[in-house]
Length: 265
Image (cartoon, rainbow, N blue to C red; front, top):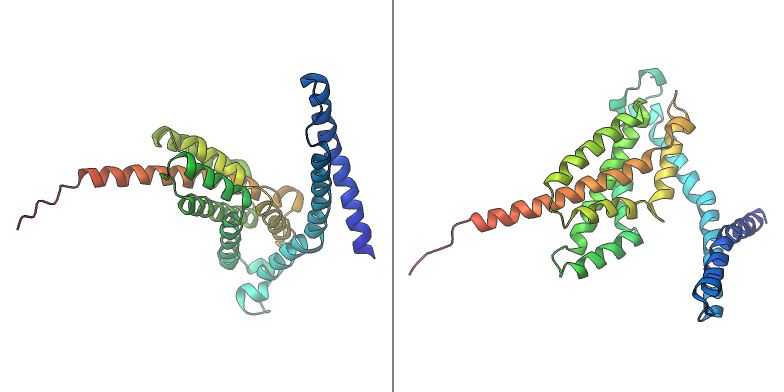
């Protein structure tokens, strides 16, 4: 019964969130463009589906993904799991003992990015616009590798308690250097790749992992240390996609510089 009530509450809240968008679009159509909204009934029905979907999605986050992230973080950071013994105190655990957390975080970042619908759509569009030069799978893998590295490094920051601005500043310094050297055609796509990575699938799981990890590691605050993983997830795909473009240029130059095969019979 509580599940149904909570779901209805989330649906009602989603309706209030979407209502200004609907009102603005219809008002703009009527008063600025001066025409009636075509297929108005179909559009309203679509917005109702959006509201219901958002409500179910938010309830799913509350009931499954956030508790799952907290549970996995607690299990992976427990001293009994880290050191295979209950005799060690929490104070004896160092950042090196959390290697399973780093591996798990990298796996979560990679797999969620590969499954991200927004990234799939952008990769397919980039493949079409580039005439097949940019591969769909290649771009998705490049973004997913960056997301995996970003989430893993973000978990390292949560565990060590190092300041977040240092990591972000260093990361964007690398991005600036790569932007200068990377082909111009790949730069806008690389920047957009960081944005589409942090979407429907990735954000809930990464946020749940960060909050659960900060809550499980002694001396860490979920408010101060639990957030920030999404920033890593958005930053490092930019680096890997720019590197993907630079490697493509390097491979092309190497193929051109290779002497032709003049074997004669």
